[in-house]
Image (cartoon, helix red, strand yellow):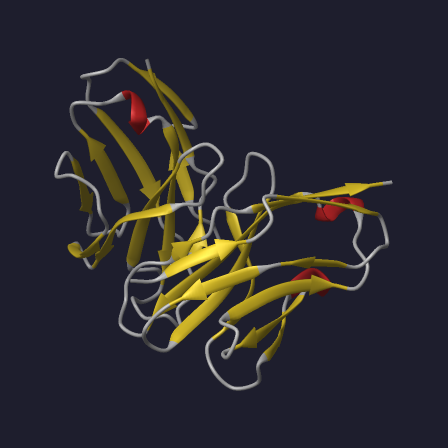
Length: 114
Length: 113
């Protein structure tokens, strides 16, 4: 069974640019959640996708957007990058949206904005 | 709104000593509580969770936690730590019907030989 994978591992972008991060969910999982983890902080919920629809969003501006594909993989897009967007971006997949469904986290993508 | 406070940002202990990592939460409704571990350059791994039932929860790698509703706490304990337990530990809370986990700021556990 393949776990959650994310690409790329590291990324350096310039302020104002756009970035796309990718996540492949674990086999059999239909739900993907994205989190932002700034240095020295706990992860913060960005949004969740369930069966290709957004199913909840945290306190992030609209320039953070996402997609989920029919195979349940997902993308996180960030437009107009700001320095404060530098962080580790984690995705987690689960086999449902309820609290009883364990979220399995990928290793993350570290984004640096200069 | 839910929030989580991890009372210690760093906890140094000697190998084979006991450890307690403290977590307090605030919420106006019934909550579900989790502890995750993050090893260097890796994602988060679930250690244990409290959904209902017994307030003493046992997890992987010899960890356990006790849910205390009156004190709104969910402290993590291990009777004897190993070098391999060196990692960042996160406490998290969520509510019935909520999509998101709300995490604390993390506690860095350092094991000294």
